[in-house]
Amino acid sequence: MADTKPIYILNGPNLNRLGKREPEIYGTTTLVEIEGWCMEAASGHPIRFHQTNSEEKLIEWVHEAIDEGAGIIINPAAFTFTSIALLDALKMFKGPIIELHISNVHRREPIYHRSYVSMTATAVMAGFTAKGYPMAVRAIKDMISA
Image 1 (cartoon, rainbow, N blue to C red):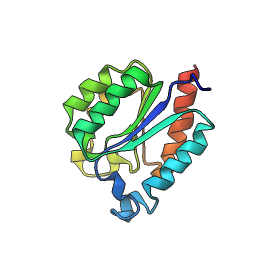
Image 2: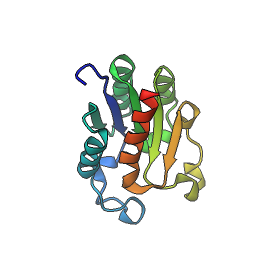
Image 3: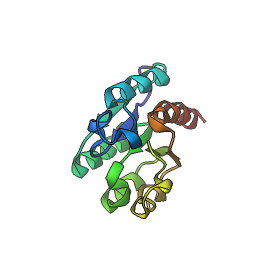
Image 4: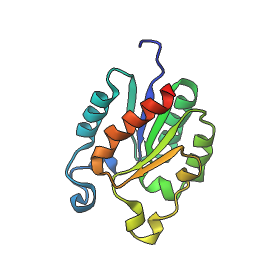
Protein backbone atom coordinates (compact mmCIF):
# COMPACT_ATOMS: atom_id res chain seq x y z
CA MET A 1 0.00 0.00 0.00
CA ALA A 2 3.02 2.30 0.01
CA ASP A 3 2.11 3.64 -3.42
CA THR A 4 -1.54 4.28 -2.47
CA LYS A 5 -2.53 7.93 -2.61
CA PRO A 6 -3.84 9.27 0.71
CA ILE A 7 -7.35 10.24 1.64
CA TYR A 8 -7.46 13.83 2.84
CA ILE A 9 -9.76 14.50 5.80
CA LEU A 10 -10.07 18.25 6.11
CA ASN A 11 -11.78 20.08 8.96
CA GLY A 12 -12.67 23.75 9.06
CA PRO A 13 -13.06 26.40 11.72
CA ASN A 14 -13.95 25.66 15.33
CA LEU A 15 -13.78 21.88 14.89
CA ASN A 16 -10.68 21.90 17.10
CA ARG A 17 -13.17 22.75 19.89
CA LEU A 18 -15.19 19.54 19.47
CA GLY A 19 -15.96 17.97 22.81
CA LYS A 20 -16.34 21.41 24.40
CA ARG A 21 -18.27 23.40 21.80
CA GLU A 22 -22.07 23.14 21.95
CA PRO A 23 -22.15 19.49 23.01
CA GLU A 24 -25.94 19.46 22.60
CA ILE A 25 -25.32 19.86 18.83
CA TYR A 26 -21.87 18.35 18.26
CA GLY A 27 -21.56 15.82 21.09
CA THR A 28 -18.62 15.31 23.41
CA THR A 29 -16.26 13.48 21.06
CA THR A 30 -12.98 15.30 20.41
CA LEU A 31 -11.28 15.74 17.05
CA VAL A 32 -8.38 13.60 18.33
CA GLU A 33 -10.82 10.75 18.97
CA ILE A 34 -12.34 11.23 15.50
CA GLU A 35 -8.89 11.06 13.91
CA GLY A 36 -8.31 7.73 15.67
CA TRP A 37 -11.61 6.37 14.39
CA CYS A 38 -10.69 7.45 10.87
CA MET A 39 -7.30 5.73 11.04
CA GLU A 40 -9.00 2.55 12.23
CA ALA A 41 -11.64 2.74 9.47
CA ALA A 42 -8.93 3.32 6.87
CA SER A 43 -7.46 -0.13 7.63
CA GLY A 44 -3.96 0.88 6.56
CA HIS A 45 -4.94 3.22 3.73
CA PRO A 46 -2.92 6.42 4.19
CA ILE A 47 -4.78 9.39 5.62
CA ARG A 48 -3.87 13.05 5.93
CA PHE A 49 -6.02 14.47 8.73
CA HIS A 50 -6.02 18.26 9.17
CA GLN A 51 -7.95 21.00 10.95
CA THR A 52 -7.64 24.75 10.55
CA ASN A 53 -9.49 27.91 11.43
CA SER A 54 -8.04 29.53 8.30
CA GLU A 55 -9.80 29.53 4.94
CA GLU A 56 -6.45 30.03 3.25
CA LYS A 57 -4.92 26.94 4.88
CA LEU A 58 -7.96 24.81 4.05
CA ILE A 59 -7.65 25.79 0.39
CA GLU A 60 -3.92 25.02 0.44
CA TRP A 61 -4.69 21.50 1.68
CA VAL A 62 -7.24 21.07 -1.12
CA HIS A 63 -4.51 22.11 -3.57
CA GLU A 64 -2.18 19.53 -1.99
CA ALA A 65 -4.91 16.89 -2.36
CA ILE A 66 -5.32 17.83 -6.04
CA ASP A 67 -1.68 16.85 -6.58
CA GLU A 68 -1.34 13.98 -4.10
CA GLY A 69 -4.72 12.68 -2.93
CA ALA A 70 -7.09 9.88 -3.88
CA GLY A 71 -10.16 11.40 -2.21
CA ILE A 72 -11.28 14.21 0.06
CA ILE A 73 -13.57 14.08 3.07
CA ILE A 74 -14.27 17.64 4.10
CA ASN A 75 -16.15 19.17 6.99
CA PRO A 76 -15.74 22.81 5.99
CA ALA A 77 -17.82 24.00 8.98
CA ALA A 78 -18.82 27.66 8.49
CA PHE A 79 -16.90 27.85 5.19
CA THR A 80 -19.54 25.49 3.76
CA PHE A 81 -21.95 28.40 3.56
CA THR A 82 -19.58 31.26 2.77
CA SER A 83 -16.59 30.24 0.69
CA ILE A 84 -16.74 30.43 -3.07
CA ALA A 85 -12.93 30.23 -3.00
CA LEU A 86 -13.17 26.80 -1.35
CA LEU A 87 -15.75 25.71 -3.94
CA ASP A 88 -13.41 26.82 -6.74
CA ALA A 89 -10.52 24.84 -5.24
CA LEU A 90 -12.63 21.70 -4.77
CA LYS A 91 -13.88 21.91 -8.38
CA MET A 92 -10.29 21.24 -9.50
CA PHE A 93 -10.13 17.91 -7.63
CA LYS A 94 -10.69 14.93 -9.95
CA GLY A 95 -11.38 12.25 -7.31
CA PRO A 96 -14.36 11.69 -5.01
CA ILE A 97 -15.30 14.34 -2.45
CA ILE A 98 -17.52 13.69 0.55
CA GLU A 99 -18.93 16.75 2.29
CA LEU A 100 -19.50 15.82 5.93
CA HIS A 101 -21.35 17.52 8.77
CA ILE A 102 -21.74 16.22 12.31
CA SER A 103 -25.20 17.73 12.72
CA ASN A 104 -28.05 17.59 10.23
CA VAL A 105 -27.62 21.09 8.83
CA HIS A 106 -31.06 20.89 7.20
CA ARG A 107 -32.74 20.71 10.62
CA ARG A 108 -30.97 23.86 11.74
CA GLU A 109 -31.43 27.55 11.02
CA PRO A 110 -31.94 28.55 7.36
CA ILE A 111 -28.44 30.06 7.14
CA TYR A 112 -27.11 26.47 7.23
CA HIS A 113 -29.24 25.22 4.33
CA ARG A 114 -27.20 26.45 1.34
CA SER A 115 -23.86 24.74 0.85
CA TYR A 116 -21.38 25.90 -1.76
CA VAL A 117 -19.41 22.70 -1.22
CA SER A 118 -22.42 20.55 -2.19
CA MET A 119 -22.23 22.03 -5.67
CA THR A 120 -19.11 19.94 -6.32
CA ALA A 121 -19.24 17.13 -3.74
CA THR A 122 -19.71 13.57 -4.94
CA ALA A 123 -21.75 12.82 -1.80
CA VAL A 124 -23.00 14.62 1.30
CA MET A 125 -23.29 13.16 4.80
CA ALA A 126 -25.01 15.04 7.61
CA GLY A 127 -26.45 14.19 10.98
CA PHE A 128 -24.58 10.97 11.74
CA THR A 129 -22.78 12.69 14.67
CA ALA A 130 -19.01 12.23 14.93
CA LYS A 131 -19.57 8.58 13.93
CA GLY A 132 -20.11 9.89 10.39
CA TYR A 133 -16.36 10.27 9.96
CA PRO A 134 -15.44 6.56 9.92
CA MET A 135 -18.54 5.92 7.81
CA ALA A 136 -17.23 8.48 5.32
CA VAL A 137 -13.79 6.86 5.30
CA ARG A 138 -15.27 3.48 4.45
CA ALA A 139 -17.49 5.06 1.78
CA ILE A 140 -14.67 6.98 0.10
CA LYS A 141 -12.47 3.86 0.09
CA ASP A 142 -15.25 2.13 -1.86
CA MET A 143 -15.49 5.10 -4.23
CA ILE A 144 -11.73 5.10 -4.81
CA SER A 145 -11.59 1.38 -5.52
CA ALA A 146 -14.62 1.44 -7.88
